[in-house]
Length: 204
Image (cartoon, rainbow, N blue to C red):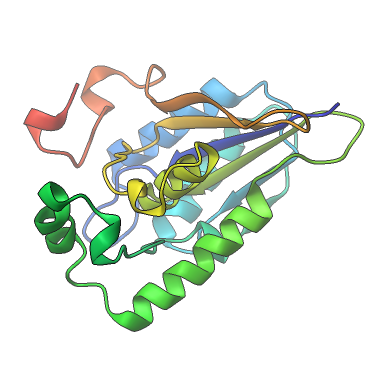
């Protein structure tokens, strides 16, 4: 029975204008070199420039000629805004503060895209051979898909942090639950390119 291998990565480090910095471009190239020999069936990316550029640089490193396409469900959005009772009392203030700026329209739009991401990207594929798909996306989307694979409550996407150009791998089987093979893996990046954009005390 075939297995769907889903490779998720956050875009490289962006500058103030939204495009990749030199460090972000270097991160993307190194990620592409790590993935170079995998037999990808597709490379998909969100619509924002930092995701588009990252996908282009990664795909240039791949040995095989892989179609690269844009997917709105791989964009940058808040996938779920939990109601009060979804969050433990000791965490409510922090979660509420984190999501305070999300409007009702943004919440509804994000929820629709999150559902679309699950529908299009997850679950087993009925095929004769394994499939391999790379999605260049954003931190929240990766967190949402990991949460979904682990069957965690919807609110638990909050707190799953992702570094730029880090690699997360999910596998979907026909006869058993999904497997989280790797999460936020950065061994392809030198120390100075890991955890960019995060405060020093949050870097490993």
